[in-house]
Image 1 (tube, rainbow, N blue to C red):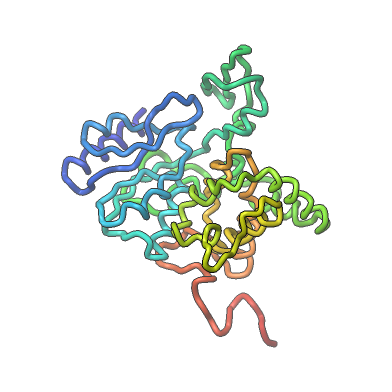
Image 2: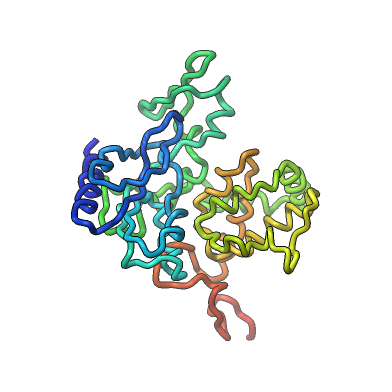
Length: 318
């Protein structure tokens, strides 16, 4: 409780002093697995802020739309990477921003948890590494690691990389077996045909709703998105899987070296397509080729946004 009390006190003070017009945080809602994004606009609103396993949404996604306003934002470690990336690209201004950082040891994944219980989740409580889940069929227990978002199980940045004020004790990064890219490496070892069939099968379920794009904190093209451009006409209205795959490839290339792996794209998908894996494959390549981890340096540009005649990590000539 001390952490949330300290956060509320700091937010209340920032609003009272007029250092910010609003603070983006989370508040409770009717969903037992999710806290709702919340704009605290008055000192009294600070008491509504919460933080826990349900504080999933990456609030950095709202920042580009609030240009010109003094905004406070509450971030977890992973979210702070998105803030740093937006700053590095000049998409938001540091002087307009107050960052309240919270250390985090994982958030719940509705999809993973839902696969392990019978029926709709009506409530969830945590005790000693176990999540007790209530459904209409009764109660059951799920191990915490089986209920957390998979990216939390390989998290290298549980503490904010950038914050004006930090709250909570520092959390040790995870050290997953096989390393943070083990899942990507295992998939890329499959034969090409098998990988292609995987994505044909998964993207065959895509509704082309573009929720993945709309949830991405780094997607800022708005009405100029190639998915909906008619001049030039990059994508047709065809509902075939190749058209859907083309959009995902375009989106991945657009965010290559910029994607902070926050997982908002996958979380927003209404049919649970594991599209974060596509983005992680390029994030791995960006790190291997350029030593670049997106969202860890608010002063540095992504490698594909710069040009060097000689890349230090790519031997072009002997």
